[in-house]
Image (cartoon, rainbow, N blue to C red; front, side, top):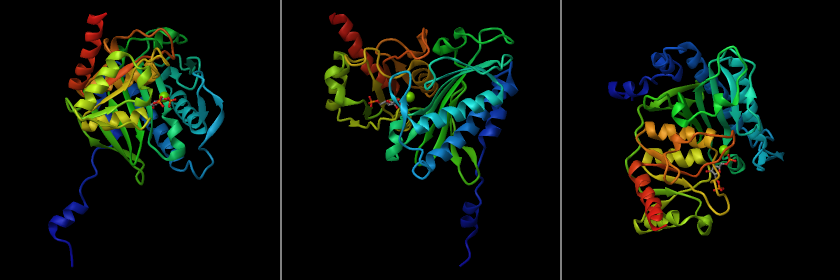
Length: 341
Ligand code: AHM
Ligand code: MG
């Protein structure tokens, strides 16, 4: 039986806009450095495709498991952490648009030698990498700033230690059941799904908006006894409201689910980690920028995350991020606590 006209049209539906074309049409947002900014996003996309390939064959290529060393936070480095770090740094150095890179895997700011480049990047090349061995989703998180030191000179710490509000773009790549890049350059949030057989990202989630509220809360509740009172009280509120607990231990995956469905993710301060665990420059800032662009909120309990003025490359911050109404409710418990004090 031959297909009807309608069935045939279904078979040949256009695949849509590639990331490349999308970037080209967005260039007008960057009047000072259009081509350079577009090239930088392309470099990140290329590196992510290579990392995606490495992750997909991790079990076959003897690149899962521990590398036998620790990073500057005293955490075990996985082999794929190192592979992803090299892939992104090489792409950004060779691409030529970035003068300095802050990476979770490198103690010092990386000077790329591209002194005429206009941008700096902060990156967590592979977040949640302890999930690799068990075939659970992981991610890359990145943030882009314009440098503040004059072009032509070596970069300095002031180029990367900028306030969160100074980000010109941020995003993540989620290596999940499909691979996605979610991106903001300050004019909303767009999601692109990777089509492996074509080797391209396609715009699949234009103008993403986070639901104002939801029924999912994500926190490592096993640390309950170490949390401050407002967080304990808010968790009790989540129980009373019959919310669902969802926590996979990969920030990007937990965040992405909440972005689509509505929810709140928390990694608060605790007696174990007085500043929380997540790093300001390449974990909190990029997703805080992105969540605000999607209509959500990100705070440390009280203060807006994007208003932090970082002092150190690997500084940590407590983070409460998600649907605006849920974050506002969590914040009330912190305000109440202040009143009691
Ligand atoms: P990493 O950058 O070393 O991978 O650590 C960050 C990860 C996040 O992806 C995740 O949200 C968190 O650590 C989980 O931590 P915990 O096991 O303490 O809940
Ligand atoms: Mg990380």
